[in-house]
Length: 150
Image 1 (cartoon, rainbow, N blue to C red):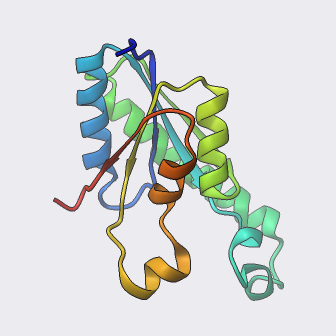
Image 2: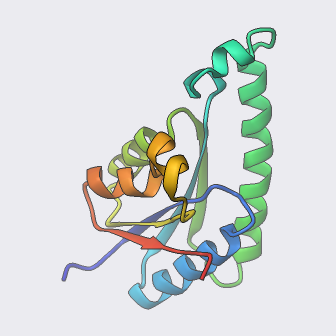
């Protein structure tokens, strides 16, 4: 197995993000590599029916407000992890989560992606699909999927 230098960890900043962050930091320590946390703010124009639902708002303002909030939360996660992970960094972008995760991981020459799953099933999974599943199918590098609910 080749040595790993960088793990990209997409985070959705929901209630289970800290479990994924802790798991990724433990893995990075064991593998002696860096971590790049990544969050994608899904643009209102990329959400089905989002453009119509938000027609009265400027989507740029909506997106930039969400990016600012996401950057604050991600900075807090990185500061909290500073004692355990001095090589952690973070990035927030706007767009389609799957495409942006894959583009970022390739651009950073990531050796692995560690991604959480929501465990959605039934109609929700059929209609929306799974970001983790689509990343797994298209990634250029190994993907470790973690279930933060267990």
